[in-house]
Image (tube, rainbow, N blue to C red; front, side, top):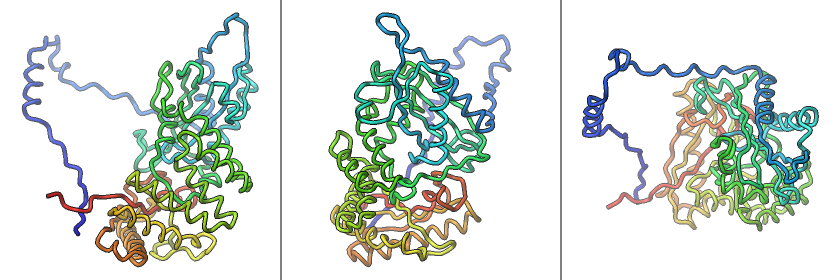
Length: 418
């Protein structure tokens, strides 16, 4: 059985369309200055990042000062219930020390300057009352504002969503310098072994980044916000080392509409592992693998020794790795899938060396899978992309950019068509 990669074809301009466009342009009324008419418009200057404190204050005050709140039927002033759905990184969906700091500052700002709001806990009980919800993203970007290459600033996006009307009330955006910003993931996200694109998290990010005031709230986000509130409580319990409470909440979230999402699967695995329930943890990790295979992509945070294909020696970190690999091999075989195993590195060091190292690590994982399931020898390929597909891009080589040193498993076609 042969495996092949799906390469994206390079699109070229259609010559007929180009000719017609030129003809139509020639029929347009000429301007008084033909030379000026042919000059392309000057792009706006890039947004200049400012110190984090200033950027946060700008985004937050723009958010609250530009909000047109719903009026009451009797015209009397009232307090509006507001909950904060925890802010996240706009690419990975992770919460961090920085996003937690921003939440605390938002609560303090509301208390001191915007008394028309009453901040309440983000819980299923409060969400059931259809309050105003604050969502936000904090995203590393390059000079052009893109989430690629060297991240030189952070883009702050805040939005207020009114669950009663189903509309976005206001937005606040700014760009912050990275100085003094701590994006270390919180405990649950640091411990989570896997990552993949997830519809629930994408809907949260789109609610902030893909809307303007007056737009409808992303429908998937609105439909699953009760579940999101339960998951948020479970994450808080895990961060507080209340593992049994967290497990109970993850199990409850799983039963709710939209509960079959990565944060829940990771939570079920982590809490069972922490409670010493190895069999339940194994089953939970198997469900993570199934979820990734169904979504055609799953990233695992394997920790290697620097510059090596050997795993880190600390068994507290690498102890579960054999379980992970065995579940990946078993469930891939059960699904009868073929995989491209892709190694990644951070941006530290020369890129040719990074590409070579990422390939060697992918090949090492490939051999381990084939050892567990020999039938995978004809159904896996290895590839290394170095730092070209960084999700975080800080090049800190620590917990902050662990996702950049991931190994991904991508479902690919097994047979050459025809």
